[in-house]
Amino acid sequence: VRTSDGKLHELDVLVLATGFRVDRFMRPMEVIGRNGKTLEEAWAEGPFSYKAISIPDFPNLFMLNGPYGPVGNFSLIDVAEMQFAYIMQLIDQVRTGACKELSASQAATEIFDAERIEAAKNTIWASGCNSWYLDANGVPAAWPFTFDRFMEEMKKPVLDHYEMK
Image 1: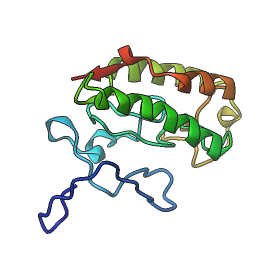
Image 2: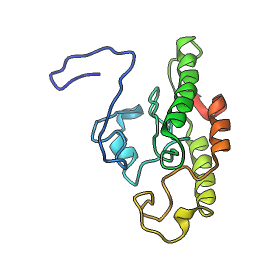
Image 3: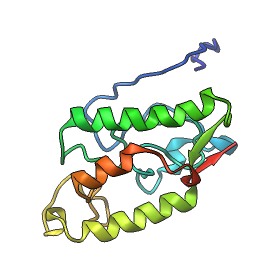
Image 4: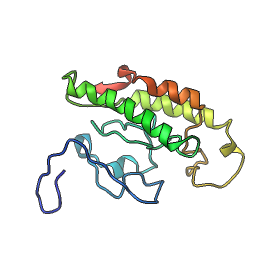
């Protein structure tokens, strides 16, 4: 991390607590991904992620309870533990030398998003209510699937869904 005074701080892990703006996730912190694109630019039309954990073109950036996470659906403790175990499996790819960086692929993210939007049509959030859970198009920003599916998805990353370099 480079601070505003220009000093570089080498870290193994950076943990952030961003306050109550649940729809802002890591912002207003500036995160810069591939080709100099900022997270603010990537999320200009709204935050998105692959399984609430990774964002295309933001290598080695992983989130707990990111966009589309099941924060309002299930126990935060269970969710965080499962996400952390999943993320550690991704980090192990870098630690063991399988790659130097990885991030969710655009294709996998788009497929996940299409499935999420379709599944959301069958949830209570699609009943006409007004809520911060809904994006500008009325689509819930929360995990629309079952807890069993979340547990299954978090068991092991599908590495083909990640760009590894």
